Image (tube, rainbow, N blue to C red):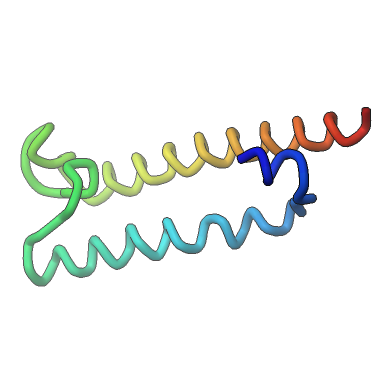
Length: 88
């Protein structure tokens, strides 16, 4: 993180690439789970009750979106702080 803040100059366009791996991971996990019934995390398990599963595919997608927005917000905050540090 220090390297990212002090040395590297991130571009806003990179945010699109930051989301490709998590998005592909969630999609691959859901597709794989349809075939063999294995989901690695409780919040990616669409069937079952809370703690055994999140309840539905819609809930899985909503949680993935919320987690993505949180990470995007934190990444934007780091980008903003990096910009302010470099201005000084």
